[in-house]
Image (cartoon, rainbow, N blue to C red):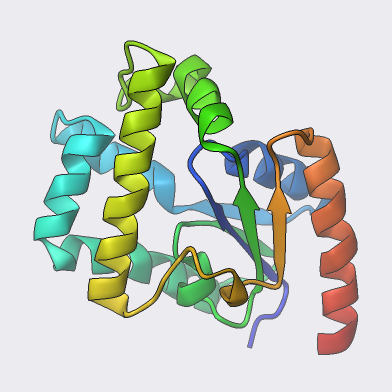
Length: 187
């Protein structure tokens, strides 16, 4: 079983992408991102990410395909960082990290993130807050129904970090420190 795997999930705009990029640089690991696949599907269907969320709510098979892809990839690779909402579930033997962020800060980050503009169109930070809250609630309901798992149950994780007032470098440093301790217990 591959043990050199870190799964990172968290709140929307909690810094997962930036932090996993730093971890990749520090560890030399590869990154597998479910979110890119989801955004690609939404864009192909000419939908916003919120509209695509409704498609996922109505079609369990698409959701299962997305989550299964992380599990399959991890079974064939080591030295891997998984950036996926249910990475902790798909790869239960990974070092499981959850990144939290305050809703207002999450909305501010999402609103100002140019990489999200294709699939997340917000007119204001308040609009972003509404959409983010809606997506979080919908995802949690879907994951409970489809997988019988609650992503917001912090007991699922080896490490939980609030990123609201931390830099991505600080967050990555905490993860690296805790991951090395975790690995010592596994090896």
